[in-house]
Image 1: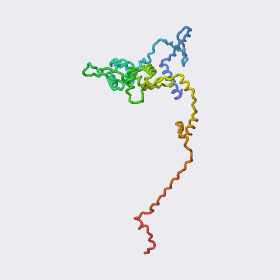
Image 2: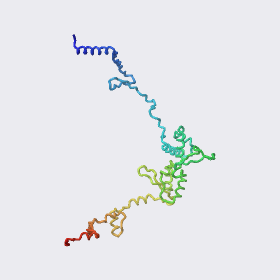
Image 3: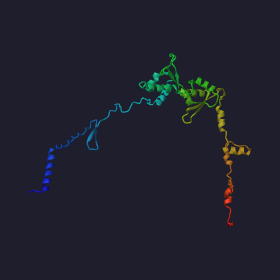
Image 4: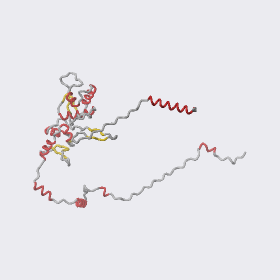
Length: 301
């Protein structure tokens, strides 16, 4: 006859065997078929992965279009960027353009009307754009009229208009070629011709010899110099700078090349002693309390 512990052990073992019989058998994972070896004439290449299973890498066609990035249309999506492109577009055309033409260049035709109105508001208030109302309309709409580039120097687009503009100037500060190109992009050839005719004075850059500044010139003041005189002028010996300074100083003249800082003698500077401020001693006691500080020890009761 078995003991109580042996009966409990046999019952527990029988329960586990019954539970194992009810559970379905686990299927083994199918093995992957062997990958065929790539041939030499194949257009694909086999690249092993981290797990060891080779994968095929598809060869990309060089002429296929890539649609992961949008096409570069040359126009930004921000309204401020569109205004910059609009100014450049009107500048290159050089004539008034309708709003539909400007919208077509900026890709704003399919935008919401609120966006189009915002673009129109900025175009009309831009300092470099001139808005011309439609003369056939009694009341202008938000999309009516034409737009034209307003250059920094208006009405200067040829040699005659340039000379007239320079003659009207009341100062001698000249005109920058950068401002001329804003309304006359192809002005360099005309400036070279006017310079040869001694009608304008041109300052050019040292590196590229490009015109930088323009002033009005008078051809009647130009006089030619013979080559013989130029050769004689070049043969004249000019004294050195030190000799010129000594000769001018000998006759009491002050040369312009003399550095005035050299005349300053480095004399020792006297140190100024600061005066000591004498402070008056303040009152040690209050006047209204003098009667309380008197010595009454001599008084006896």
